[in-house]
Amino acid sequence: MMKWLVTSILFISLSSSFACDCANVRFDEAYRRSSHVVSGKIMDISTFEENPSLLKVQFQVYENFKGSSLSEFYILDPKKAGGMCHVYLKEGQEMLVYLTSIEDELPSFGLCSRAFTLSELKERPKEIEILRKVRECQMNYTSSFIIETYKNEFFKNFSLLKPYPNTPGIGIYEIEIDQLNFWTDARVIDGFNDELDQKILTSIKKSKWIVDDYYSDRPIPTIVKFFLVIENEFWEPTNSFYLSVLF
Image 1 (spheres, rainbow, N blue to C red):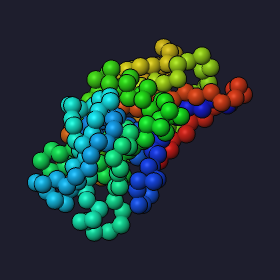
Image 2 (cartoon, rainbow, N blue to C red):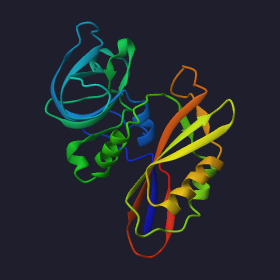
Image 3 (cartoon, rainbow, N blue to C red):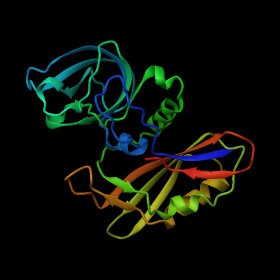
């Protein structure tokens, strides 16, 4: 069976490290909201002297996918914060982390941040493959809005596309919306083939994209940019086809 996925997805919780479960964080939103995306190893965890409610995590970066170079990030100290749902990290862990900036622009990692252990990524290599492709395209803007997908016509129309058995495994498409003048534009960043790419772009431009400021109290700009990653995976050669959007 051929399966197309709009990658918005694949959040794996570090179950041994977190006290509570968190809702899945879509790839596109996690990347766009993040100031830094890096893989590496936790070298040390200590109290942050300038703000004792935080812990400073010394991090040896293996690969930098987004943002400037860094040597540490910050988490809330579970012992000094109320409630039970907090991040618990360990020295020696090798991880891929999506970091956001908090007060004073400190890169931070929270309970609902997207994250993988590097051992998990050995079984899910597409996460790194997609990150490298996005890095090559230099789509490094950071913004906090979300895209409403539930009632979006693009995801309904996409399921009408015929299967393409000889296309690459990943397609990346950038979307630009002018909310004041009501137009949508799109371009291929790393596509499948001319015929399929044109159908995808046409469907994107005809669809109504709703932007929400759920994650931030900052006003959404008039013109917003974001991207979709569409995965093409082959399971069985049955010529069946469907789109799965996971949340």
